[in-house]
Image (cartoon, rainbow, N blue to C red):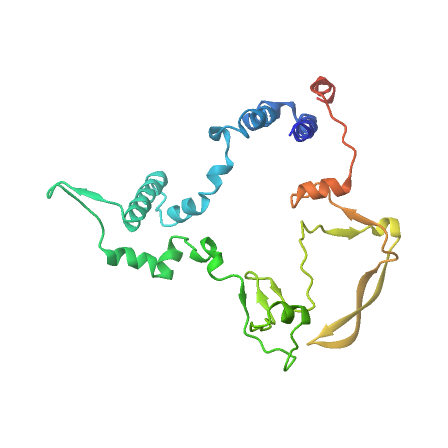
Length: 270
């Protein structure tokens, strides 16, 4: 934790120095001020205060956009507030909430048919952006795919036959791990931490652009040639260390030197 906070403080100081180099007025923005106090907030309570965090509101953008679609724009805030109230009432009723009836002086709930309407109807669930498959993935994955094996009578490994002499052993040709990943014989199971995009350093490799790329028209090769880059080596590549995708792995593999900029030097930068 101490190392992380030290590195975070160095990067914040570098970022603030870059901001000041554009215009010193930005230093008075509240978000930059909160960023400067982020290391102390992490050390004290694990992160910034909830009232200062604007990322939490972004999770409601979909609901907000859906509520403002059919507004006549005469009083959009009022229309959005009414839609939010309707959504909350529908959620309360569909989740089995009890309502107090002043006339009968009793608490009543919706009919089971109303509750089953949401539970058993995929279109209704989708309209509320509720995906039961994502909440309960273990009910579907993993499962054995029904595929035909290329081997007619696959032999049982001796080690399995000796360990389970009275058992029935069957081969599973393919196993669906999730919606996209499938494993089968001859596949390697890898634990991929991240994927980084490397671009060839054509400047250092002195790669040439030649008019040698064949062009296809209706999936047939033609004599028309277009320019293409011919790489001269596979030794030098460029890594974007400032990429927003997997920033930690980009930063560690790039191994760039970090020179902290203390606040005492901000006056010279400005």
